[in-house]
Image (tube, rainbow, N blue to C red):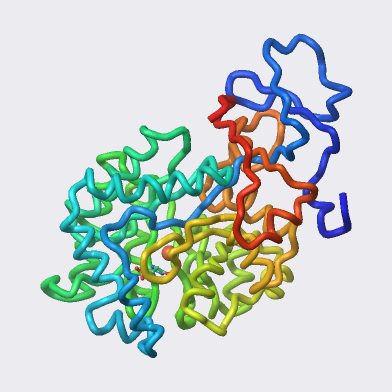
Length: 388
Ligand code: DI6
Ligand code: FE
């Protein structure tokens, strides 16, 4: 209500939402609310938003990388640490060693912290196992987290996150193993809702990524991509060519790649926590994304190495401050466009017929959600029509 930047949000003052069978049955001004409701709840002046969606996390992992953080403070770079066998590989060792139960216990407070901010859907990737048993173990932990909490979890197989240093035959052979063994096994077990890859000099080439995508397609799983984070390997255009739900990071993506994504309907997932934590000076080209009409989502990338970000609300601030998103862009990024990045058409907005996933925040205007650095104004959540 406060300015043109908020117009796309479709704000209703003194509004009400009616829910039936877990879906939004009606919404509008409270004065117009049809009678006959069996139960009513007063939100006490709180703002009702669509339940927030964190569409890119790696929140299941063993150990942490606080010691590496200290190394980086002393001057080592993220790539140097990775090439020396640390980085992702230190998390792989810790994740392989951890039991399913230990991973569950470690991940639970990370998930609950997001939920406390009004998050009702979270995506969780594997990618710290890098062998068949450990990748499936991570995905099982994600499914168990969903079973134990009132939250929806979308799982993504990221076996193509890094090439395990001990793998005979190196990157080419490991890519074959991912395509021929891990992806079919993950699909057959029903543990993966999508497949992701890390296309980067320190990870998988575009040709190897394409093989991973073909294997995903063969078993009917949608694809996503960690694209153009540290260098421009043409990841955005590659994702678009394969009809990816999203391409994520995109700091180095070209304007042409971004246009191709918009044409393909892929969503750009912005991860300012990684930009901030790695102190990257190169930012995604938001102007080119706007010009292309590309939908932008915003997410934590919650992971132990490049973005130990446990607050989606904080990402709203970083998205606005670092990337100069408007308040409306940032909020659409954690709702409607985040849903699109997961291929979930049944949520992400307040609209009749969609899931009644709601977040209640005690704020005076939407900009407040992006303004505070820390703090949490969330006073309630509703998941599929049930207060949670
Ligand atoms: N990009 C990232 O930012 C994370 N993975 C990826 O592909 C970082 C993973 C890590 O450092 O543990
Ligand atoms: Fe990531």
